[in-house]
Length: 320
Ligand SMILES: [Zn+2]
Image (cartoon, rainbow, N blue to C red; front, side, top):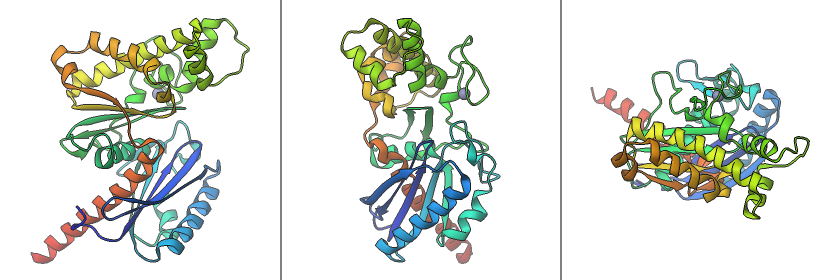
């Protein structure tokens, strides 16, 4: 792998709360990483990316060959922008390319954040030995990405792999994407809190998904029920991708997965009940291994791969 690539590659992972960024060496080692809060204003975001680029140039000189950007939201391959971002609405329809061109002097490549995190787990993490995987990240929202036949599956327009916005509860609540009863509205951190308040009857209480997890561990019945409910809907979502894709691996990350078996046990039970038996038993369902680095490492690896492919296309043309 290191024979094909040289230099350094930068990766940016912009979510609703944090901008994580870093640099990988050609061989894939993570050479540097950092994170800052995501500014709510898009112009502030561009200024921030500009100053981060200066920081990276100070550290790595001119050796950075390309940069990858993972942005939260529905990324259009044709328009090269986020058409709609349920959890970072400042990105909606913003013309990313001309703005980034002013501040990033090397080739850069953009995609959806969870797609690039899926790519990160595939290249560097839990998915390294596989050719097909479904990646899910469960936190404030639910992001996902697909690797099929060893490639990031982008779909016709770039919108593939939005498992978080597949309907799992036809009577569910409205989602930030506009649909109702999405997987995201049933298993995200806010969903766990909402479940808990419903089961405990303490509608006014303020708490976080982590509190619900700590209470489940301590034996609180309402907390356990809220994980069972979210796990049930997660299991429905998993059975959909198992029956549709017969994947080798389903890799689940994100803050809510810190709750581990409290969410995963009911999810696996439900997925098993609803999946084709052989397909279920061939699929490994595991916790992600790169944690918060999956997105920025995947973005850098995506830039590395896309730049190499661009160059090989150009050299083939020259030979002709
Ligand atoms: Zn949705």
